Length: 204
Image (tube, rainbow, N blue to C red; front, side, top):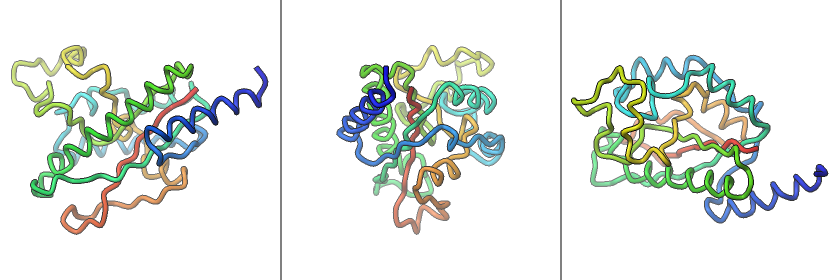
């Protein structure tokens, strides 16, 4: 297949993906940065560590992620404006953003599935934050053996639950800025002017 045919294909795909979610940018995967520190921030400082199957220690390591990225040439960075649940105190940040996270996850899954069915069979989505599909994730259930490395088999949403970028060692801040988006640290959920999520869709 000639190069211009491939480019026409990707242009058509991008145009159709924008019907699912309009705010994204195409990048080369060399702009996706891996940082070991990201995983450490999950392990030390995050109250959700070990509580969700798309977070450490249940997700691939930074080194595995680095090898995954090498299987691709391009990716999409997608931007989402989150709509918090106003009836929930911002101090309960996960529940404050609960519905927004589920909508974000659904859209990333939809983007991945459309790309896959369009012939981009290696398409793989990555999200951010802790999964919000269920009120209580499997690792939080007392009857679960936390040493069971195949515990994900009990997930009722495993067909669409995807790992968090930061959980797998991706430096989200640098990657998002490399894509041309602005991103800053959310200093307080009480004084926010807007909360933004970012997802990554690997394409080949």
